[in-house]
Image (cartoon, rainbow, N blue to C red; front, side, top):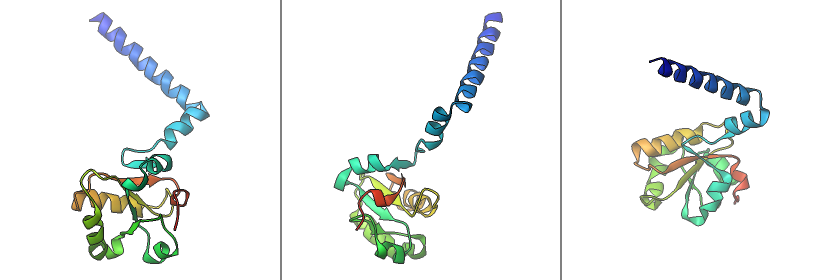
Length: 138
């Protein structure tokens, strides 16, 4: 039983030291903070998918008309029922779906991607992490 207690104590110390090394290492901290979440995709990852991905613009119609990723479909919460139909018609099971809005701080893409997964069964919907304008605007 003593070895079990010592092992647990050593693991705890290792965890604390590992956390401290990240806390005081700016490079490690930046990498961890900038790492994409499970529902996100980076610009380079998205670009590697090429034309096989379905791009969804979660911004307003006016912003979409001012410029968007080439081939992207408009889908926002303001006109969800009307705009969802072309998205569902174009989507195929297993097809990568990338939802974007103005910036990483914009929550519209996260909300639209969540609704696509929950309400439309589009389980491959990911949120673009990074600026959509770097992908290729039209």
